[in-house]
Amino acid sequence: MNIPRHVAIIMDGNGRWANSRGLPRIKGHKAGVVLVEEIVDAAAKAGIKHLSLYAFSTENWRRPDSEITVIMSMLRLYMRIVKNKLCENGIRFHFLGDLESMPEGIQVDARELEAATEGGSAMTFHLAVNYGSRLELVRAARKCIADGLTAEQIDEAAIEERLWTKGVPDVDLLIRTSGEQRISNFLLWQCAYAEFYFASCHWPDFTREEFNKALDAFSVRERRFGGV
Image (cartoon, rainbow, N blue to C red; front, top):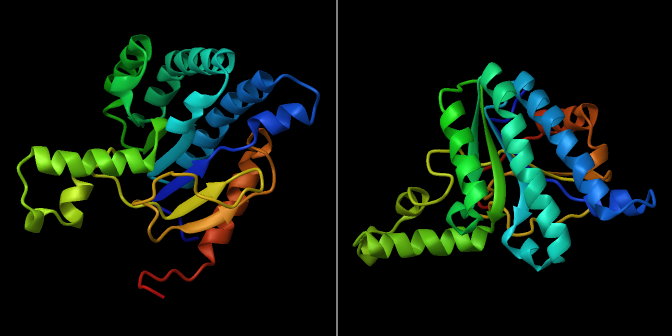
């Protein structure tokens, strides 16, 4: 079976999952957090080397303050309780996004988790929080200028060296749940030649079995890396 090196997932549909059950939106977010552990485990066991999950975008700050507060609290709790399991399974954690703009407590928790798991070699788990691909590209371009590069020196390698995903292979498979078929400012540069897979179920229903269906679909695709 052809296994992708890097799988990225846009975890969409937590709110709609909750609404369809007559539950508050926050219940959907909690169910989504529970599923993260299952998919991280499934990806590692499948032999995937990089898993990127889109948890909170730069645009998500427009949500109601009460919802954001709960999401941030769940994020801190998750980063604290997942440490031992990631270490036991040799999984390295990487915060993917604008960490410096996050609340101080989250910065501390993220850096502690990265440090605790830095020796993991089975898989790297990239959790995208406060992430926006356009912001990432703007920051990379500004860094090129700040580093004194001339226009002629700014090429693809120079940009990639300054992305938040420095040293990470491009995305092979991008999955989005909840039936939506758009990329939503996620890993635009890194998904240049990715295969797309759109699942109709909401994220809390995207079980290990659904994940394996996506891997099966990827394995039979004929990939092309040219312009057409």
